[in-house]
Structures are given as structure tokens and as C-alpha cells.
Amino acid sequence: MSVTDAVKTGFKKYSDFKGRATRSEYWWFAIFIGVVSFVLSKISTGFEDLFILATFIPGLAVAIRRMHDVDKSGWFILIPFYNLILAVTAGTPGPNRFDQSA
View 1: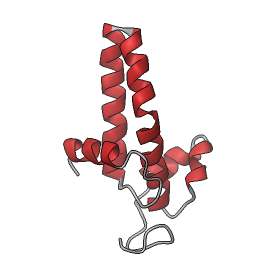
View 2: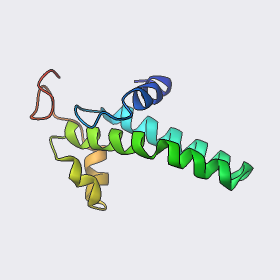
View 3: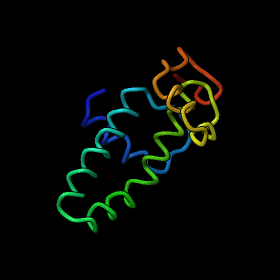
View 4: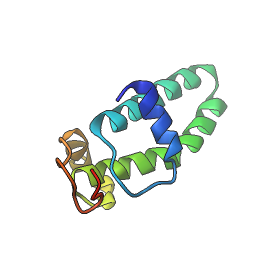
């Protein structure tokens, strides 16, 4: 998945907490948020704050879908370090309990 596809998908599915997100979708979206946030912080803290506020729910949704891709509950994003390990782990091949169509 390309950067633009990942960002489009992240915002298109901003309120979709079901289904799965691939590693590339998750990481490209996270990198996009980090880079834009850094650039906006150099311009104005207010712009950065608005951007972070606007991307909080889409970022949360893609993180939860990423946990679903490794066949874990979305609540695992609350466990520090372990959620990072899960975020870099390859997704479950084929269908899992969170998405039967994959």
C-alpha cells in the first residue's frame, strides 16, 4: 500500500473500528501524522494542536484495526511496548475472528 493510499484509507475509514489494517497502512498513516505534526509544530503550535485533534480518532481507528489484523483485541493498544510488537508483527494470513473476508 502506498503512502497516499494509506492516508486516504485512514481518513476514509476514520470511524471504522472493525476490520483489519495492514502493517503498511498503519505505519504509513502513523508516519504521515508524525511528519505533518512536526512540520506544523515549526509553523504554529495552534495548527499542530488542531491537526492532532483532527487525526486522533482516525489514528485510533487504524491502530485498533491493526491489532485486529494480528488477531488481537483493539484493547491491546493500551499496553505499552506490547502494542508496538504487535504493530510490527505480520498479520494473520487469511480470515480471522475480526474479518472473515480477508
